[in-house]
Amino acid sequence: MKSAMAELEGQSVLRMPEQMGVRVRMILAAVVALLLFATTASAEVLKGPYLQNVTTESITVCVETDEPAMMTIAYGRDDISEQSVSFNAGAYAAQTTMRLPEPDDKSAAGFDPQETTRYIYKMRLENLKRGESYVYRVTSGEFESAEKSFVTAPHNLT
Picture 1 (tube, rainbow, N blue to C red):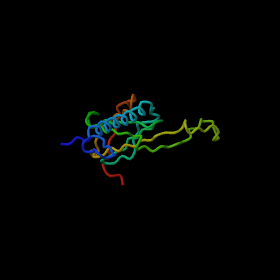
Picture 2: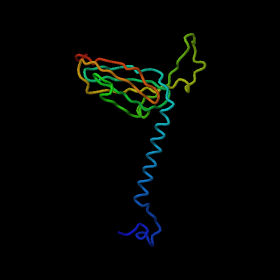
Picture 3: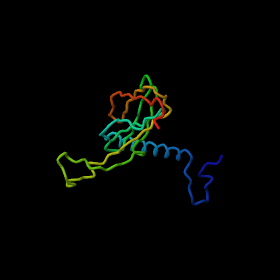
Picture 4: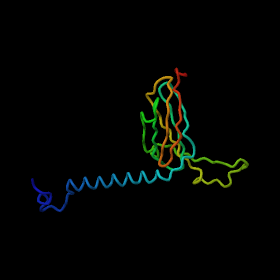
């Protein structure tokens, strides 16, 4: 088999050897992973976890943070380690800017979007059993919620 240099003899275009391309891709993947995890370290959970949209076979777990974050929900019927869902929630979160006034504040004076931006994550757990109790815990960086529980609907609520 000819070497890459012998193949290119007389040509003005150089090709990157296969092994070099693999190394570059690995380095890029490491940099992307590092950036993703670097953004999760500083995220503070402002609210949650809390639950929405319970059905016979699913439920939505919500968390609000001040920064994009990597989230993991561990859950199960008897033990939270039965199943888990992880994803970079920042990529899917709805960014909502809201004003959080003091109780006696009647005006918009002092509104600072930097201080009131929240990332709201809604993670849907599906394929659950009808009318069953589940336990779950949400983790993100150094945050770990208490073990919590929910019950799926016993029948369709529509």
